[in-house]
Length: 638
Image 1 (cartoon, rainbow, N blue to C red):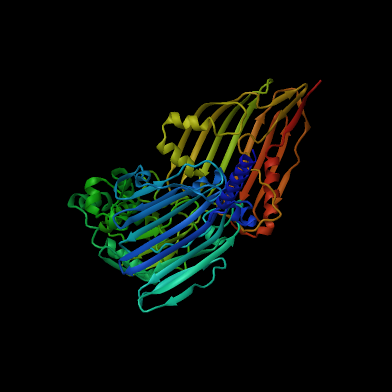
Image 2 (image 1 turned 120 degrees about the vertical axis):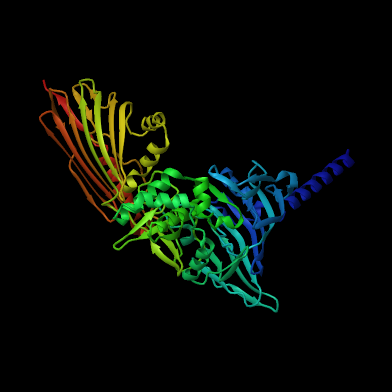
């Protein structure tokens, strides 16, 4: 019996020692500093990136990274993905999965890695592919490790160092190393207290090294600046570079523009039948702007956007003859085609690179580099510039929309590149003017006629909706659009006015059951029927980052509501007048005889505001939220 007890105690001791050793694995979660766990969904335990430039057109990229996933929200950081194409190839991938104690529980097999097309729905042909792997592990916390090697057959892009990958993401250790052959120029831009690199120079290479240690997770703050502005980042770029047989220089915007122009030079030759069409359409017109609009309409009616990304084709347009024959092209090809059409009509235009997207306005104007993902056309006139989005079949000529407005763009011609700003649409352009007439019956049911004028950015979403979707789908969306408890859309119509500041006129007929609520002798009516501000912000006394507000707009509402006979006002909302650095708001209600008249003006100002004023912004929008829902109380006469 004693021997049995000794054996059991020995086994328990052995198991305890084994457990303690396992719990003390290299990647054990217990080894993470508790300060890094605060507010974190994931912690980067280790990362080393090494980018080695071998020659003007050859480079290698090595990355080893280890991330501990703390909860379900951190799962996205456990997914491995790496893109490749004709210009870059993935040489090797290794992957490992560890449990909370740091014990390895799985390794990646070659058959586990998915190889997918990275083409979008509008891509006719490209060589973009992506390798993807996911352990799909759901026992938290766990740790993943990946090691990859990528070969670059070009040097137009250098990878940036962004060690903090997202909000609620902490970093124990990350490093970036760039090595270059002797005499190779290298440019970098530092953000947020990233120190100067440790530079090591040898006979065969020169290296630059950055490190980041123990960086706590960041909570997202509403309307924060761009990620580059709030976390440690190093942006990098070459001076001399090569892609396939094309050599370029990125030392200045002018030099980079020369490279882009060389890619498109000679590709603006049109077939004879298209030349004849150009002259048939424009020779009888005397006004240059009218010629531009006529040829832009011809482009829209006779081509469509399809992406074609094959090797150098990711940066070089297909020639104009190709587009004329095929009647399709990507942004580069369609822009180049429009450039050729205008050229045949004797109108000079400029191929223009831009970073597109409603939230993609951050730009390093002092760091020449390929920060662009789109191409548009700019046509300089004597007094202004006509901007053309050549991938759209529905946009008005001269109008850019939220996709490319108010940001830097690189205008390219035979002299090189020049950085300019695209038009900004402000309060006077981004208008919504709404006139609402309603009638409330004795049961609180309301019939509503609404006429709304939308201008510039205020009409963008509607413009896309009515030009792309079927009438049935538009009606389906309108039935979900308004903040009304129960309504039926009886009729709707739209009219577009295409110009450099486009307009959409909307007409709606709505029946809203029980919009006005009854309680005994009283009738409660919210006079702001359709234009209620919908966001509630949470105060934050510890706000860290500036407030960035891009969109400026003005809404003007006039509402007339005919009320049932026999009611008189018991309580009317007080007039509201708010003026702040973030915007302006006024609202007033009157009752004359049996008609409620409501007026509302709201202006939102764009700009960058200090973090200390965040609660002032919260208060401003909270007051609007409440004022928009103020009720008129009517009581039935005895």
